Length: 293
Image (cartoon, rainbow, N blue to C red; front, side, top):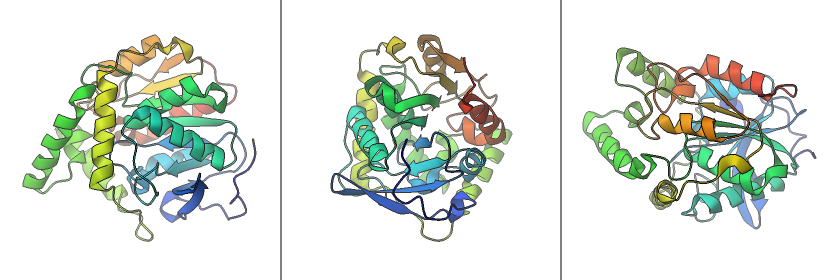
């Protein structure tokens, strides 16, 4: 594994202070942030629908970066990255691979959340030598039940957010219970911690392309996951409305070397944000070189 071209830059101590950098990927600039120790296998984070750099929970990123080099990035056409957003998961995966290689890495770990989990599955299947271990959170296999309903649910909850003057993530990512509402408020406050050099919001055209890609993924024939021989950690809340939680159980059952984190109680799609301390501890344990399923 070779070091990234910008490794001489001092490592930031927290995600809210991590500088936004860019790397050219076949003539298109991809923006990214990195922090954490520079030794060991890098952990690349693949984010969810409509997310940009500022949508990663700093508690999760900082917790992981205490022991691992963590890299977040905007894929093609998303946030401040250039180009046009693809409308298939497979094309997004190819762009992610190009980004990883542009940084000079020949082996990485992957953490994919929701749509990012779809992308991580494709990367692991198509570029097995590039991947060491995979964490899949709030996600499901191609053709998984309910995934083709993401567009309808997202639009409904976005309109609900407008009418109630609340962030749609409160409905999409968390349960509508006292505990879920407290967790959603805390999460949204953490997303405001970064005040300087924030990322650009996703454009409407990119958002539409992502919705189209997710819809296609949901309508695909179920993939044969037995070819993914990497160790995989699978996590989710027990009440995920976006990618129904039974998809998490299906993934764990179908992946040959999977470990299933017990579904987080009274938690939805953002279960790893709601239970960030427990998730970070389990993820770091899983990512240790000696860890085996």
